[in-house]
Image 1 (cartoon, rainbow, N blue to C red):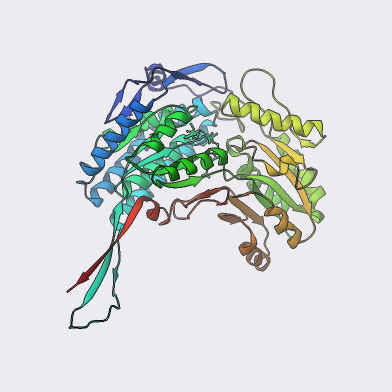
Image 2 (tube, rainbow, N blue to C red):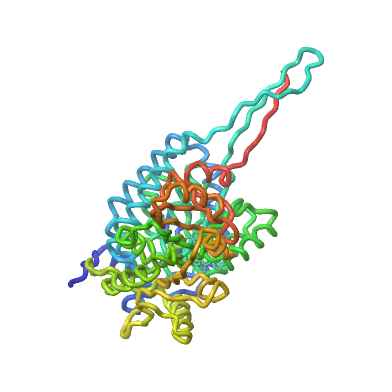
Length: 495
Ligand code: NAD
């Protein structure tokens, strides 16, 4: 099969000398060091990005602060919404360009980049835009006793918190960047984004489109670099809130650093070891296509995707037989080939991490299906199903963030819930059953921020998302994000 033609615009963008996007324009980095951007399919260097130092970060934060107290504060809520909608239109118009940039830097299938990453970025941004005119306080009636006929009233204001530092991972850089931009801008905040060093390009391009959309300069800035650049951002005194999406160890370090910086607010969207439980009544022929798609989308590099399958013992043998057959049908290939069903892992560091887990499984004879690293160029591994030695097995406990799932049998619901909850994480879970009464009794007992019934991994802007336990602090989407991006100011009046 042939690969899609890379747009001239994309090739030209890759060849540019990339700096940071500050105060409405690309500007050269003061920090001299660079990082190579590697295409995970070809292992070739396709661009270089700058590593921002403290001076670069301060420049961006100053610009964001000036925009926050200036042009953006002068923009009415209605106009904020219009501009975010205009940016959504431009993302749609430049969809193929952004999708190709994502595929070239993350190995995401081109159709996934088009129909999930870009399309959902547009949907989420329009959802956030619609909140701009609805960020309101309340009025209250105090009960203070009146001695001389005086009266009291009170109201609250929701005021934007200020400059937000948004730190983004590599798996869905554009979409997660858009979540942070949407939450910040609709509430009246400005933002400095620090994309992942592996997948920086789509957010640099997005910042240019924001200027075209009429979003004032300085409202969205992008400083590129690695972890240290992110640290400078958190440490900046003008950054009032950090919105981080990434791994648990980094999230914990960021949480501690933010607390030590005069209690800078922080929301953390972290990893998971998500459980999908297939109950005794489930029809496997109905379950498997949806479950497989939810599990192996973007080569399993999705925080919400399942990594642990629990199957009722009465269905275990049938499950293993059918899933093994289905995994063999998954066509691995170039992500630019529209007929591929499964591409490479996104970067070499992650490839090495997943290989380590595959080696561990092979040493202990735990591979049920897949398990191979594909020879040749690119960071390709097979979609893999493993058995586990028990609930203390590292393969049961640690997030691989790859296409590596374990399967374990259970006998009753009590045992199932105990095994599902046997994890430091609590991001997502799913139950696959038509027994509504059983599902409703189990839902409150499962430790997960999002629980799906007969589905998994789907996010929607109207439904809050975030983790319990070590999977995070805070919630995104719905109206749940508003508290995190605003100060609630109380006003009491005696009259
Ligand atoms: P990561 O934690 O390694 O890096 C995330 C971002 O943090 C990158 O931009 C990185 O440069 C930056 N960073 C690293 N160290 C830093 C430091 N000390 N200070 C400030 N910034 C720092 O994560 P990753 O490998 O990019 O992403 C994969 C992880 O993200 C997985 O654990 C996955 O589950 C999680 N994730 C969670 C969600 C969610 O919504 N819960 C979504 C996507 C990914």
